[in-house]
Image (cartoon, rainbow, N blue to C red; front, top):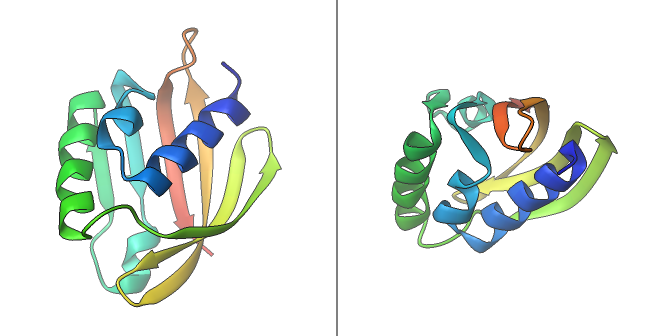
Length: 115
């Protein structure tokens, strides 16, 4: 799987609120580092491991009452995507950069930054 395909699946899982599909994109020791949430007053989210991603997003989708609203998805190059995400009643521009995937196409490092 290419980095672009992984990013497309990431966006799809986020839009569907599917924590299992999201976690399945990660290597057993993969890292999701999301500092975009600081714009909403929340702490940076740093998750390590497939199970950590699954559990955290099970909770996040539940607290959000479903998926996060993601709009205006624009793939910048093979390893990054920009989009708008809603945290509560506010919308924030972010960029997700897929730093590394393993030989099976699973995420080893995904960084999400506020714009």
